[in-house]
Image 1 (cartoon, rainbow, N blue to C red):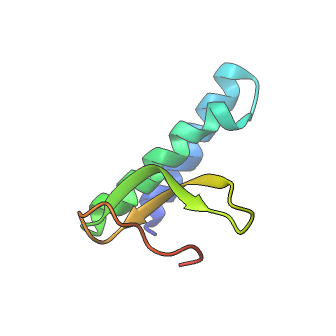
Image 2 (image 1 turned 90 degrees about the vertical axis):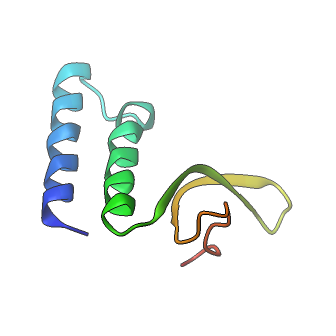
Length: 79
């Protein structure tokens, strides 16, 4: 991941903390999405927000991920 993208992310987090006074997930998740979107774009990949991954207990979980194919198929968990 490029140092520029990481620095932009850290700057945005700092601005959000200063403005909101908190680091709750709901506040910082947009900055993280921007980081992933920037990474995806710079590598000709596709950002998929809230991709559903099944858990072993059958309950779904949602993750932010980057996929290499524009077909809507994300990489397997753990990659």
